[in-house]
Image (cartoon, each protein chain N blue to C red):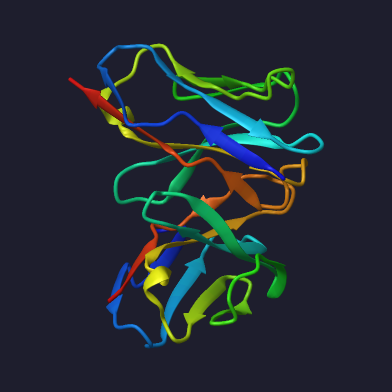
Length: 112
Length: 115
């Protein structure tokens, strides 16, 4: 069983389209995250949710909208995709006061 | 602001060679420090961590010591294997407690181990 699973794994789309990436964790963690990894493998946090509430929003453009229907799921919707959105998006989760993040395998988004 | 700097890669070693990957940081307060590893096609996994000065984290033969005086957290392994080939990320938790999950990552160092 995959602890943190993301779908889709690969996504190729045109500029201007809207797309979503879904994430689910079966670890019972309260906190979930979205990280973005660019082409140089640089990783940066985008959002963090704790028990369905947004707690970190790192000045990400409004075109990115995370949604957490319950504490086991955190989805990422992106409107009006731009070339610069091409990246690998990683979902992660953690327990409170534990310090370790568990990452999914990533979703590679390519915007043409 | 907070930042993490790692040595440029790729690092190419022969099997059984000694590995050092340098990591230095800039942070206010007392951050927790981490090494994560990313194998090809996979997400990141925690390799080891240290939460206070002079702590040594260790796992799978890898070690790193939290050096506050030099603001460093260098990763070492005495004898690398081909299976250690991966990208290694140094990171710090800005909260200092290791609890926020808001990690600041270095740029990653690719390690290639040849048989």
